[in-house]
Length: 244
Image (cartoon, rainbow, N blue to C red; front, side, top):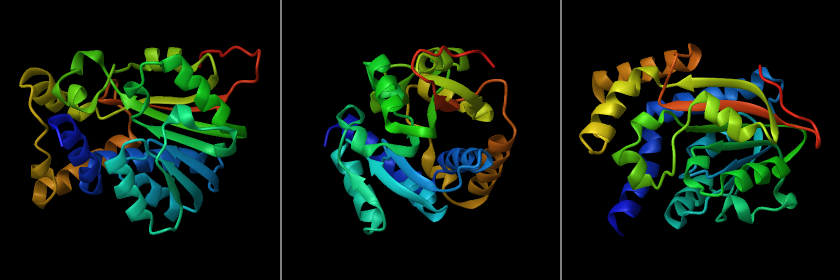
C-alpha cells in the first residue's frame, strides 16, 4: 500500500472516532428530518468505511451505500452486516435503477475532475420530490497536505458550490461548518504540510471538548468553515435556479 492509499485508508478508519464527521453527518440527518424526509430510500455515494450508512440506517432510511475504493468498500461491507446494501462502484457508473428519494454525497465532488458531469449524474439519481445533501471541503486557501494525500482537486466556497450545483438543482440550504478548525487546518495541512493530530482527539478531555465544539458548530453556522454543506432539490428541466 503506497503513502496515498495508506493515508486514505487511515482517514476512513478514523471516521469511527471523528467528532467532526459525526457532527456533520448528524447535521445532514437533521436537515432531512426538518424537511419532512424522515424515511425512504437513501443512496450514500462515496460512503467510505460506512459510518454514515449506519447512522442513516438507525434513523430509519433504506440505505444503499456506494464506494469505489476497494479497501473502504470492504470496511463498509463488513460494517453493514447485511443490514443494508453496499456496492463497489463509482458515481459515474450508477444508473436510474440506483435512484433514491435522498442522495447523500459527503466529500466526493472535490475528487472528480468531471465536475459538471458528476452533478448531472447526481440529478438523475434523485427521484421526483427528493433531495440531495452534498458536502465538500471549504476554502481554497486551506488546500494543502491533507487534500493532496486524499486526491482532492479543489476546495469550495458557498459561492462556488452554488455555482456548481445550480444548473441542475435549487439550493434549499447552504452553510459552512468547522469555523473553529480553520486555524488548525491552516497550520497543519497548509503551512506545516503534515497530517492532522487525530490521535490526540480520540480520548480524554480533548476528545470531549472537540465533540462539544463540533456539536455546537453543527447548530450554529460560522461565517466561514472547513466544509460547505448544501441541501438541494432537482430543478425541472428547462427551469433556472434563483438565488436565495
